[in-house]
Length: 72
Image 1 (cartoon, helix red, strand yellow):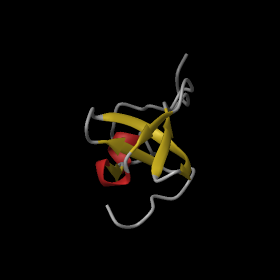
Image 2 (cartoon, rainbow, N blue to C red; image 1 turned 45 degrees about the vertical axis):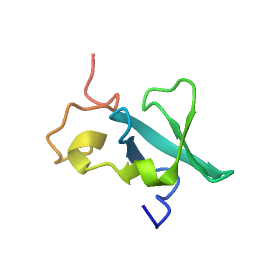
Image 3 (cartoon, rainbow, N blue to C red; image 1 turned 90 degrees about the horizontal axis):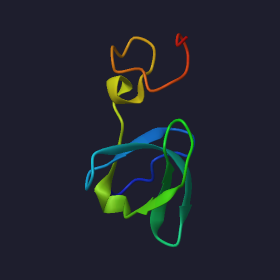
Image 4 (cartoon, helix red, strand yellow; image 1 turned 90 degrees about the vertical axis):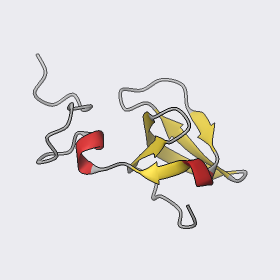
């Protein structure tokens, strides 16, 4: 992917299918962190793509709901 994915948004590491929040762009990598926290990992930018609303669990996306809202 040629354009940087903005920090604070979600991206998918297409090598593994993992969803992560974009924390930074450093040393030629996209730094991703799991949505509920945890260890960040580096992903080459050509292997990262913006997450869809459904993947990110955004309202109206109809996804798995990766966020904490609405959970008991």
